[in-house]
Amino acid sequence: MPHIQRRALMLAMAGLGAGAAQAQTDYPNRTIRAVVPSPPGGPPDLILRILAPKLSAALGQTVVVENRPGAGGVIGTSYLSRLPADGYTWLFTTASHVNTPPFNPNVNFDPIRDFTHVTLAVQNFGQALVIHPSVRATNLAELIALAKAEPGGLTYANAGNGTASHIPAELMKSMAGVDILSVPYRGVGEAVSDLLAGRISMFFVGTNVALDHVRAGRLRAIALTGARRWKGMPEVPTMAEAGLPGFDVVNWFGLWMPAGAPRPIVEKVHAAMVRAVNDPEVMQQFDTQGLQGIAMPPDEFARFVVEKAEIAKEIGRRVNAR
Image 1 (tube, helix red, strand yellow):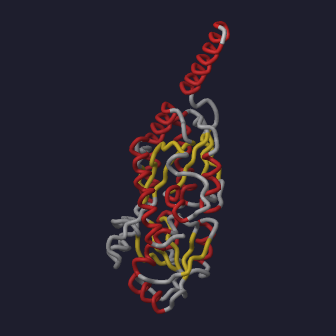
Image 2: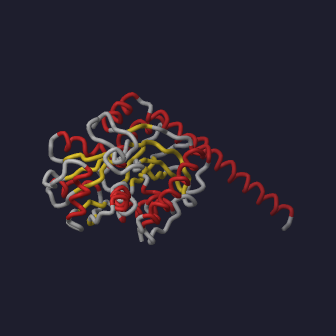
Image 3: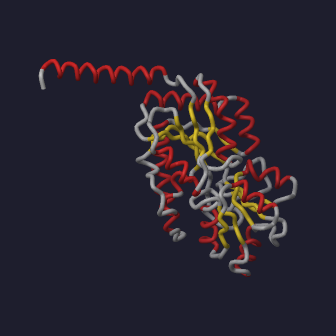
């Protein structure tokens, strides 16, 4: 290549590098889209709508929530994985990000390789196992006995394979040796509506969704899936306390970008999340809903995701998911 052409190419590449660096320095300079791969009204949607105004204030640009539901989160997550890694489109979703692939052979993304792991934002105290009052059980032991007496006679709502409504249910079935029929739903809202109407028997759902219905007597809380009780439902035992030792499944909510997002942008967004989850108004709302703001640093979150993905694979093998 002639010297002049070589020099021109080097100057052009330097210009591109300077432009990329400037774009990172100026970030963000336009609206950010936060994709939630589940319907409006579900736990990740509700949580992100609490956080979005605080994230917008911290970053100086509007964070818009965009719901892209379908296939238990696979459609929205797959969509996000194919976008430019410029920091202007985020994925905000649940533990299903790593839990779904072992349960769904049609997943077309790698939850580790295809994403930049920004932060673990929020965690709950476990899902609430709630049943319709017509179910003849007041505790987990009675529910298991009823399921054994009527194999396939009870039903549970499944808001997507690998989701926080599916994994605890299948784990309970495996540990207790019972047959309970899975009924698929497109999202939490539809499942709750059918449970309230008595069309299904039970549902593993976030405490922030279950609490008002339990207090009003429309649903009965049997147990929580985490390792410790929650002060919002102090009378409700954990699954381990209620008869399934070692049962410990909590739901968590994280933020990702497409693979290759620049580190300075990732750190800016993580810093914004730290401010958001520590905002007194957010902390108060989370506390009443059984949620904990965490804002785990990116490197720690990346290790966390890998660890949880391995656990999900083991659970998948255990319950013969495929």
